[in-house]
Image 1: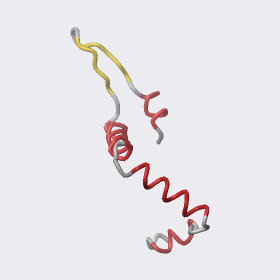
Image 2 (image 1 turned 180 degrees about the vertical axis):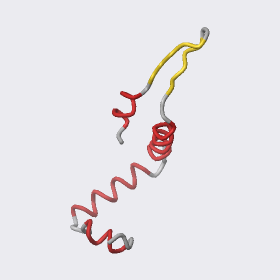
Image 3 (image 1 turned 90 degrees about the vertical axis):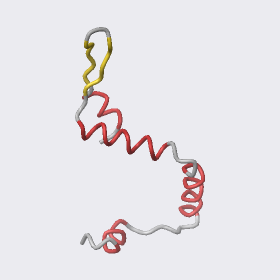
Image 4 (image 1 turned 45 degrees about the horizontal axis):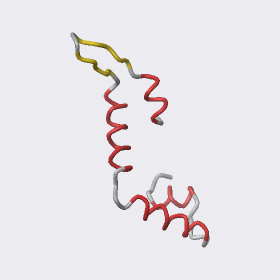
Length: 72
């Protein structure tokens, strides 16, 4: 589920004078995970390396990934 889809499911309310946001726990966990990944100091470096690998043709198919992870 992407962040835009999650935001569409968010409910905002006021309890007393304080604004609150209510969303499903699964969505909250996904947002936390996304923020951790995006705040990684290594993310720009890792993206650059991955792009170079793609340019050099150093990729594997989804079928190979599934075999490696023993998913098929």
